[in-house]
Length: 307
Image 1 (tube, rainbow, N blue to C red):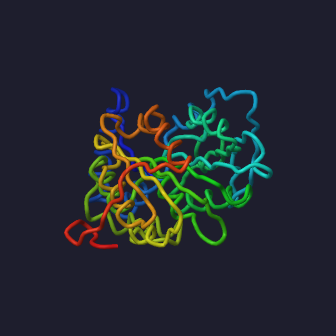
Image 2: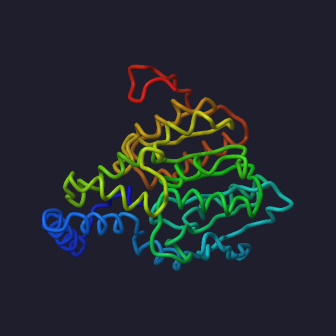
């Protein structure tokens, strides 16, 4: 689900211009077909996810496993023994991959945790062509149930929303860390519409494609509707200079989640914030039980009101 819009290179800019032109024409001549095509593009991870996953070089202590989830083959990466050790589940973001978290592994293993990461459908070494936020959440829940309740889960970007949605009676993590989490699919689709120059008249059929695929409406994917029910402690880390998922979306999590605190960084953006040394150290402090970040107090004067 394409919430991240990176600045394209020359070849990509030409391709983007072609896509924008075809969407502009198609929006007038064949609106339903154009909306379906735009929705499929929105739900198709970048090819770079698979390229980077194949190029990653984990240490020899990692073992790779494969899980069947909803008709897809999901690649998982395991350090230690989640059966006998408390474990940490790592959840990547859109068009990323499970081994993106490699800089975290040594730190988490040193604290005595087993670690599990995985590739979402259509990402990394997992099968599939398309993926949406509900499918992200379903996969988090399925992987989590396979390995058992987690002591800690850390997620980035769209993975943060998926991790929050995955919490429930069937599976849960005792503590959550969400780094640059996306909070609102209405906002994400609006950014996408602007990026590819989709006409506003296509929004309803665009949403209809997503509902047909997942059975979930975009309204149901606004995170302020879900996080008030989260009972476990949480840490939200979000950078003020995040150009892909605005800081305000991370703040919304902290405001509506009774057990969460917000750590605000600056100059790290959306991607470097994931493994910046100061962020890793802050998360490890949170894991050790130290107070990290600030408690955000809800106010009726802020968007979405009081939780």
